[in-house]
Length: 118
Image 1 (cartoon, helix red, strand yellow):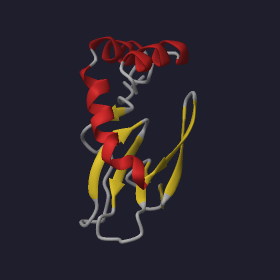
Image 2 (cartoon, rainbow, N blue to C red):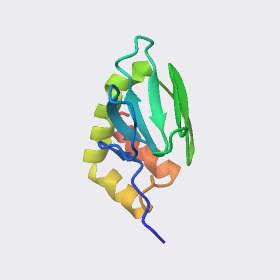
Image 3 (spheres, rainbow, N blue to C red):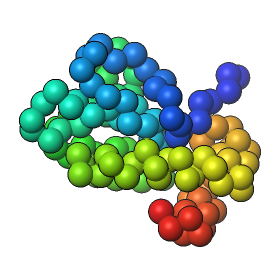
């Protein structure tokens, strides 16, 4: 069995073929990109390096183990800082590693998130 990748990070996990987009964060299994070349206020959430495996728009629905979350372009300025705070929290990193690279059970993750004001 191969190790699963962490669901959050500060480096992209997947190839993205638009040189004008700016990587924001790897968040809950998605590479999140800001297409700064567009005036529409959209975002891109990529789930693999395959061409069609992404969502884009002013809001996208991220589906992951344990739930769903809407993400909008307005969320992007704080998203990278949020991921940085999570990754600096040693208990949360240990919980993610103990779960095989995925977040700990929902109750434990929410306890840690609450303590970080996320």
